[in-house]
Image (cartoon, rainbow, N blue to C red):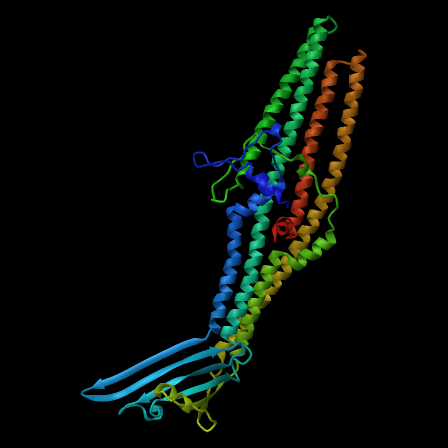
Length: 483
């Protein structure tokens, strides 16, 4: 979109009056609200668009939270017991744990246990000792564990949140475009009705002058006057439709402070916005893109990713839990002020392992079976959603092709009705026709004009429907705003 949109939009955003804003202008002064300006205002301020943006923020926050499981952890604890004049024990543990993506966990710290009644196997030398080691799972948790599974699920949820944002944008933008097309169509009908009144008034004046000159009977003036009155009624109805279409479109307009705006009846649309694209849509390419990138399918694929992670985690629980632990030990020179005496050697260490296996794994096997069933169910739902999208896109393409033919036929009919009216006018001027027949031809032409406006609005909307069902409508208007 052009950078001039901001300048032009600023001229229409007026001060709030009684808590309600207004977008206004004068048609004669060229004040126009184009579709590009409208969509920019909607994308910046519409509450539903802002709600859609929250989905992206929610996905990012979920991933950030899951990554927190891999953050290093500082821990410290001290406990001392004194009773009846005796020192039972002093227990100090402080250290740092560093989880890794590969399941191993590194740790280090200071341990100082002592006292008359302290557990002998936990007693440390004077000043305690430093420890540094690693714990590695070689059974359950080697390839995936809960921390890694939660992060993978969060990343899939982020993709699902983005897909949901796109779906919401698709729906909101289509509603706006639908109302905008109706607004433009109502304005074009208004222009046709104004022209019809003008022509009827010109004819009435001519017939009246002929009657006053003795060339026409009085009945012709009444016939011409009735046409002026009938078309004035049509004009009033067209004005009401245009005003109501503007009110309907105002539902989508908000200012940056989330206050609703109104479209004044004096503000006019750009009639060229009714025209469809010059190039016809490449339906096979659009369908291929829809099956690959449709937000609904992306959301379903994200769910499948989550279920696949859950299946892998459940399968991991069938393995025995076997963790190896190895810790190097050194004297506590840091605490005693003799840091230069700190040394580590392989002879001073603590090592061991832990093994656990539930029998006969009924819970684990049952949960794995459920995970597989859920994954199969989601897979089938994905195939079904893809088929629905394929059918919808093909149906919209057929509707578009049919409507395009109707527009071409309607355009030809307008030309033919115009030819009939021109011929009837020549006969009327030659005295070989009546004012009644001329009016009949003109009414038929007027109706064909109005019907043609409706067909062109239907065609313009058919393009938007095709993009919406293909899941690409949001990109058409969001992509130009991307930096």
